[in-house]
Image (cartoon, rainbow, N blue to C red; front, side):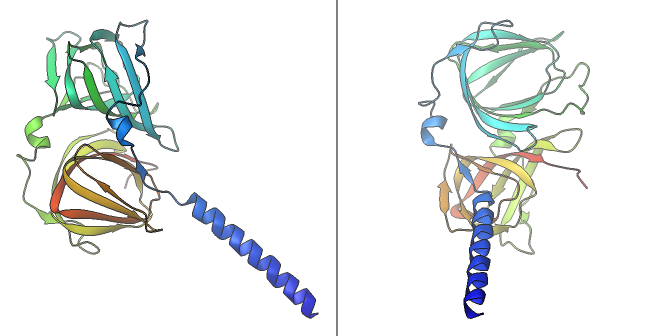
Length: 275
């Protein structure tokens, strides 16, 4: 009988350890975008981008795709050239880190956008996408949802430089005061019609905020200052100006704004229905 009890206990222990191991392996972790990717050093060779529609030579790297495959984020580099866009099948956000682009919405005059600005190119857009001499490096976010209608005659939405730089924010307010000591302010540039995709610029003073079972995916691109994110296992990563991190849905951990504060772009995506 004693031997049987020992055997049962051993099997139960092995089973518990296996379940714990699976749970640990499935725990979402922060995804740090490597420096050599952000700098373009590890993006590979330039190739024709959509050759049937234009002559742009480009290379890119997708950092992350959501579980529902509706949302993705990454970096894009392109050389001088143009591409015709007919009834764009998805919504795309581009923050221009270096260089510039010129977008000519069908029926309108072309508009140029330069480093430090951004654009939202909505689903259904028609026009010409041009990269001038000097090229383009852009941080992008794409949202694909077949159930979201295209907007007839959709036009470009500007992410203006002054707001991105924090010159048009409201006053600082307590951020999630029940659990956090951070004070912050933000501006929502864009939210999709179905409320599941968008981009904000967020500025915070020093402090900490815990995250429990994060209800959305987000990429955070640091514009100024420093932020740290700490996984439940204690893995801490520091992100400074020009760095990016992805926090996937279900992530647990803590965010820390450094003593110098931080200003970031947040490219976000909600799963399921918004309340």
